Amino acid sequence: CAFCRTPCPDNDADVLALIRARVAKKDPVAVNFLGEKYFFGELGLQRDVQKAIKLRTEAAELGSVEALFSLGDSYELGEGVGQDKVKAADLYEKAAMQGHVLSRTKLGFVEVSDRGNYDRAVRHFLISAKMGHEKSVESIKKMFTAGNATKEPYAEALKGYQDAVEEMKSHDRDKA
Image (tube, rainbow, N blue to C red; front, side, top):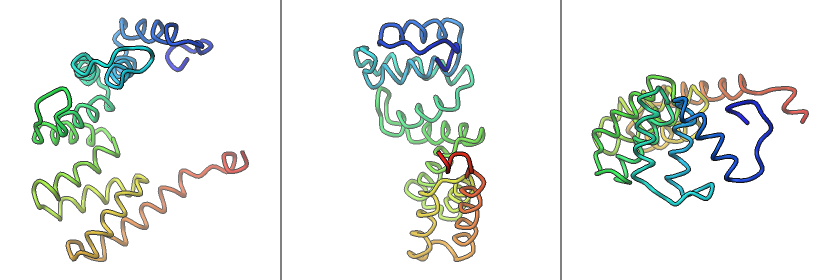
């Protein structure tokens, strides 16, 4: 088990018991995990979006960056909460400031679609590209071909992405 280092249970009830034990101890990863299971109705749980939002909020307050991102998605799409793109962007920004790559990418899309600020979008995409996020490189490429970005950030994103991918390579993993 990723939470308690014991052998993994082989049924949903035992998995939930372990997760709930970690939730009771206010483990932010476990709280968010349980929220995700309620959101999607997994592990034999009835889908309960309101409970999922409550758990995600608690996990975010406890320090879960993933919960900030998930809450951002919920507010962006209006799933379980009223749609609020400003609040979504705020949550994405909080997660991005803690190194969450997809939140950084989402901020780039927010800058393009909601604000029309291509310069800021390029900066967000550039940061996430340098963290190894391929879609960010593609986004800068599209902006470049549409005339909304210059060649320099596209080249920098491509190089940064390639460096990140190279840095993540493992000889041992390649052999396996």
